[in-house]
Amino acid sequence: MLSLNPDLIILQDGGAAAKVYDDIAKIAPTIVLSYGDGNSKDVLGQLRDIGDVVGKKQEAEDWISKYNAKVTKYRDQIGKVIGPDKTFSIVELWAKQTVVYGKNFGRGGYNLYEALKLSPPKAVKQTCWIRMKAF
Image 1: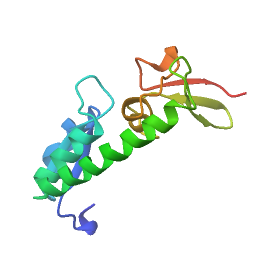
Image 2: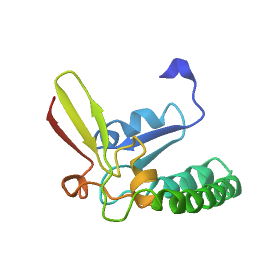
Image 3: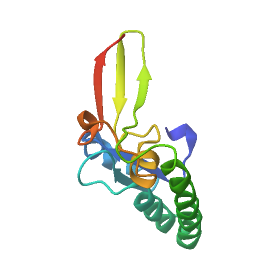
Image 4: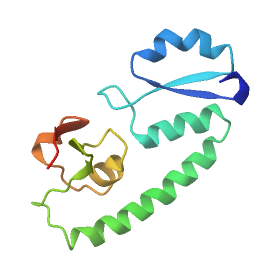
């Protein structure tokens, strides 16, 4: 990582961050973002934090305002096609397993389940992801 000469390092808090933080912080200023657990901020909260750290707080807020306007527009359009009683899945197929993702594991989960208000299947509503056998 030293050869990359970063100006800022952003770590995902998953337990390992605490173990390596002191060493990593010697390379460059380092922040830790919680992700995928009950204590983490949503992606917009994380964007605000990063904007604040890099001195672009207003740019972050401007981006969020534009994002929210688009979300409102598309939520209304999608709502006309997918009724509130329907569920929506984010699925990743692998050779030996299938993974179904919830709202806090990337893959667009926040955008689909939180912003656009699409309903995840009941089994993934309270979790990040579920592994299943492949088809």
